[in-house]
Length: 84
Image 1 (cartoon, rainbow, N blue to C red):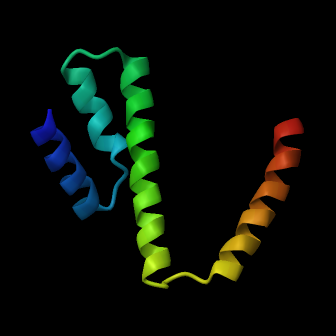
Image 2 (spheres, rainbow, N blue to C red):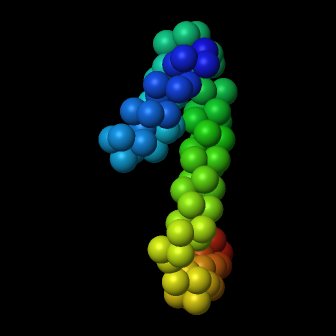
Image 3 (cartoon, helix red, strand yellow):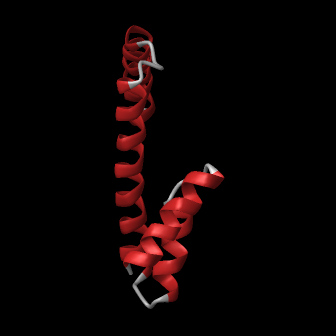
């Protein structure tokens, strides 16, 4: 499974796609239930996104004020969407 994980992550990174796009079908092929495979794909995607975010912050390729502004506006836009 480690080999599949390594090559799956490498393929996702080189292709610019989410790792869930690669890992979910592989997990289904080896016989894992669809709900578990989907949840695992989402879990892996969360850590991949977190890793990319940390790298962008370390290399100072993001304006944190602008990111905070976008985060606040997204939160404010999400609230009416949840209720209406």
